[in-house]
Image (cartoon, rainbow, N blue to C red; front, side):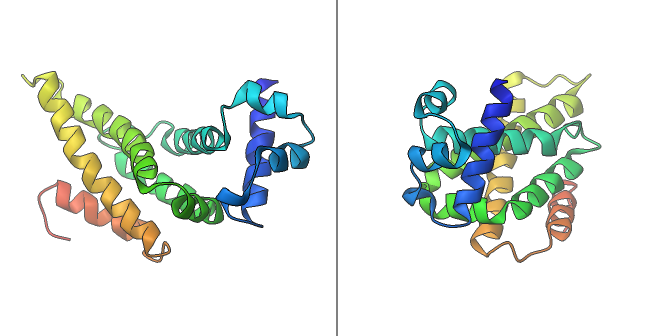
Length: 176
């Protein structure tokens, strides 16, 4: 039941974002569109930004499902690019209405989880300290997020497959 309500709130938010910017949408707008009370909204989320973050995490979780290994990270990253493009009105609205720091923090979190899983897998059987694995994952997350933000700022015009291929080539030590 809670999941159904959260998804309904998410759908209402995404629908409203097609009509007006995030900073002009109120909890009341979402509740009226969804047909629920404000109390129900606040039972699930602290504010609209909490709903936005939950929605992004849900989309990222679906995109990354099963793609957190050394053999599949490219597929996971490509899925994230595709989900971002499929939700372009939502993403562009959030990108322009939420502080860049908040967007970066969210992207850093989901990217770091993907990369740390890959680094852990690659380090199996090797004498690699946890601190070094975290450093490697942290280093690459900044690169991945930087590329993603540049792509979003450029109105998502680049081909995600080509971008992921270039990243993969660079990680393997080549030139794109």
